Image (cartoon, rainbow, N blue to C red; front, side):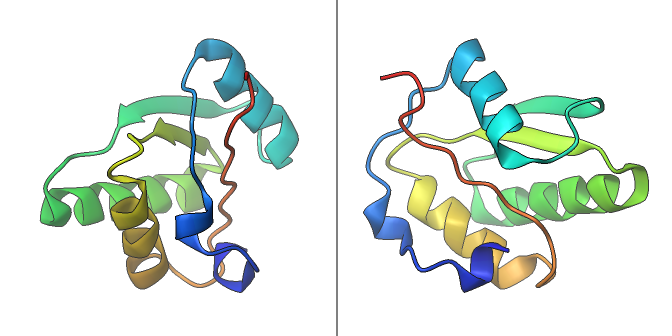
Length: 101
């Protein structure tokens, strides 16, 4: 569960999005690798981003589908804050960085 993680969002410095890193993240997460969707980038605008996160959370809860998305280094802190503030406390989150460096 992300909310109990000992890491602070500012500790995350690099993310290298590629097909390889996405598959490594999925495998390492322990989440459903048989049913997943690559969403791409989340919306830039905070309200739209929060709504998208809530929609993805709802889909994941209803279907058991893992939701994969990527974020730019300069927006990652906002994305993580939005997850913590707006998703349910028991929502599973895997944060994967530097997998293909």
